Image 1 (cartoon, one colour):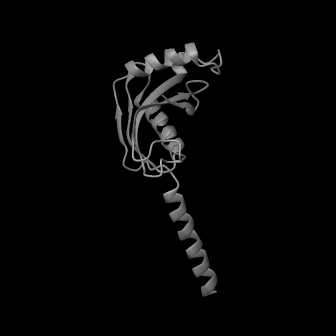
Image 2 (cartoon, one colour):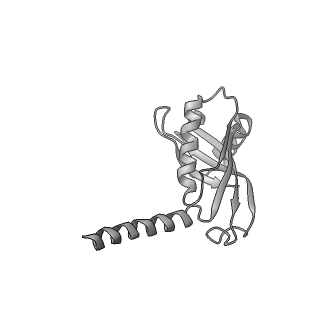
Image 3 (tube, helix red, strand yellow):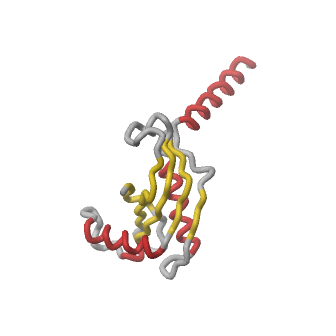
Length: 143
């Protein structure tokens, strides 16, 4: 019985260590939410949560800053609507939000797609919801 318990404890510990090493880190991120006439703080915070969840896939990266600026978001939403080829026509501008972030990349270059030991700045996260009552989903990210 003791061997089974020790085996389970060791396995859970190993999984925890592997998960910690191979996921993007968000626990120290500084979040800043500017004034908004378009979204409530709750809506913006829900978008922040969606970005943090998505960032876990960014191996070897640490999210340091995440912010919402209505002016920058509106500019990027217009660009996305004009140039985003996969944006469904029925998605309204009020159901798209753009958050910006900075994050650090470790010596491995994250998953290999980033410059090792670098900082990515003003990385954008485009989030869409189908209606004002739906949850945000990260639709696109990058520059």
